[in-house]
Image (cartoon, rainbow, N blue to C red; front, side):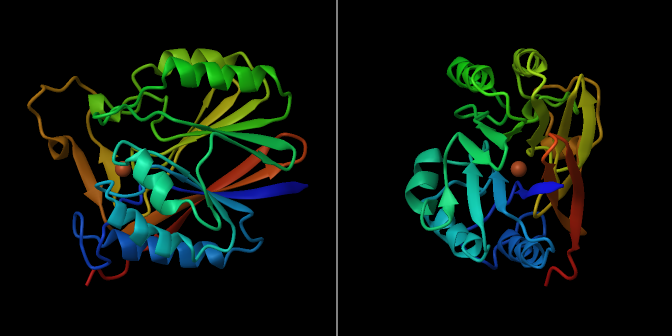
Length: 263
Ligand SMILES: [Fe+2]
């Protein structure tokens, strides 16, 4: 039996003005199309997790533009910080009505742990010792099935330093110890991945604006440009559905919204 339906949106990169573009995409407009799609789901989403890079530059004005879009969702939204975000501005400009910024949520018989992986001033991720202790304390104190969300994936998907969670091994060693951990969802890489690590399903989810192909496995030189080794795809925008079941299993699929024209 399906217990709860969660939708993950990630890497929104919202701008102040709805007509401004990144890589030929208007991210405010692509997010609005994704939200229209989410609002038409049946069964409907019980909650949405927005897993970071909510805005492109972290300005208060951009968060106010985002708030006006997220308010269209008919359910609670839980926000997380990515490397492009400013947590103070997120808290002050976004947290109204249905939008919440917190580290854990009880969801039916499941627990959701929202893990901060933002490294101040850097693109790569790190989970701080304080955050690792918080996760472990939560896992020690509850036997409920757990889904973790983090902006940076602990998977090694790309040789680019900016795509990594630097202390992924430490993070993975902790979650490996707790059989109630069923899955980890992440963003940051702007692509779709679903791999099994021990008993844990680790997923990344497409962006609501531009997708990215990671073309390289070899170490990069420090002066290489990001787009020398990555390819953008602006043909579609994505999000992930996760259905949490009463027996502690989850089913998931990525949904796509065609970009149509970028006029
Ligand atoms: Fe991003």
